[in-house]
Length: 346
Image (tube, rainbow, N blue to C red; front, side, top):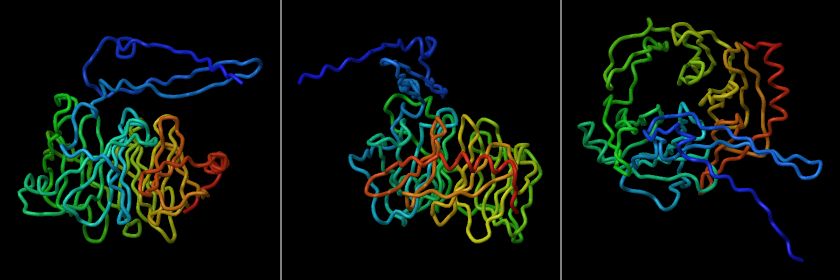
C-alpha cells in the first residue's frame, strides 16, 4: 500500500524576523502557532523561532576544546543551569563534580532537546592563571548568563566572559576573574546579609540599597531574579520574596526539614518552582509576586534539576550518561496553583 505524505513548507525571510538588522543583539524569540484542519479535526502546534545568526551566545566558541561526546559521568554531583534573560530556551549548563583539570560548560538553543547541547572543556590552568593563582583543578559552584556575558563561580574565584555580542564569529571567548575567592562576604555574625551592588565593567561601584539582614534560621544560600518582573527570590531553609529590587524581603514559605537548592522561573506567565536540595521530586509552586507557595510532588522522575522553557512547560533535567529532559505532569500543578491563593503556610 502506497502512503502519500503531504506537507506544507513556508519560507520566512531573515529580514522579516530581524527587521533588516544583522547585529548580534539579545532578542526575544518569535512565538509561532500553526493550525491545520483535517476534516473536522484541527491540529495545532506551538513553537518558538529564533534567529541563530544574531543570537549573541552563538557568535564565539566557549573554548577551543569542543567535545564530541557528553562529559556526563557517574561522579556528577549536580547540574547548574542559567537561561538567557531574553530567550528561556537558550541556556548554558555546567556540571558540579569533584575538582578536576577541566570544567565542562554546555550551550543549548533548544531547551535541552536531545542532541542539542554543545559541550566545551575549559582548562583550569588557563582560568587560574587569569586569577594569578597556580592551581591545576577547579570545581564549578554556580553559573549565570546575562544578555552578553557568562559568569562562572568556582572554588577559586568568580570568572566573567568578554561580551559575546562583540566577539568575532567563531572566535574563542575569553574569561577574566572578578573575585579571586569563592568565599562571599554575605555571612556576617551568623546572619545572612544581602547586598545589591552595582557593577561597572566588573568593578563594584556602590550599593544600590542598604544591606538586608535575614534571620539566622533562614539559612539563605542563593538568590534568583525574575528577569521580566525584576522580583528577587532568596532561598535556603526559607523562601523570601522582594518586590522592590532587593531593598526589602518577606518570607513566603518555611521548609521544616530540607533546604531549597534552586528556584526556577517561568518568563511568560510567572510560574515559580522551588526545588529542595536533596533533589527529590518534592517541589514548591508559586506565581510571580504572589506571597504564598504550595508544595507538590511529581512521579516518574528521580534525581534531577528543574527548569522552565519558553512556553512555561516544567522539565526535570537528569544525568544518565547524557542530559535528559523529562516534562513534568502539569495537571496536578493546576490544582496546586489554585491552592496558593487560599492558604499560606509558615
